[in-house]
Length: 179
Image (cartoon, rainbow, N blue to C red):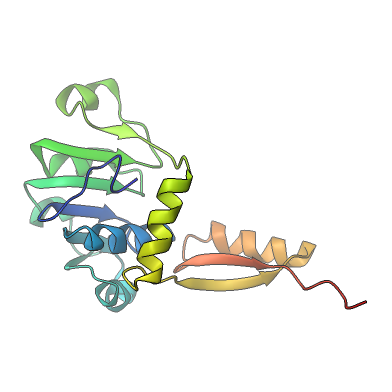
């Protein structure tokens, strides 16, 4: 999505809104692998992690409005449903994709490239991500693991709904008993 839909390339200035979330962590790394300058938003507790995975600039959204410090960006990847502010920092030719909200008709009139998009997995994209992981350009970050049980699924769902997972929430499937 970062590469194909948002067309992020070398030298682009990109904002990943919500960089510490399960999607943002990977979006940062993929954009960096394309050669982009990446800014992101997150609470202060997550700044070290985000810098460690490649973010060039991390803005504490509790302290600073990113619209006060970021301007003339090529692309915004919105994972927080803050389309209006994302559009405010774009160049006139900038691009925005939101995976949570849909741009209004008014927003799209000002920025025709603004759109909602969700993952449409295909073999080519999955192979490209696997190659980035294999090459060490993208690190797989696991927040927590839960067993495939009713209690485990309940706990995993609670963790997901907390919006504080740092990486992927994994459901583990036990090996079948030996015969």
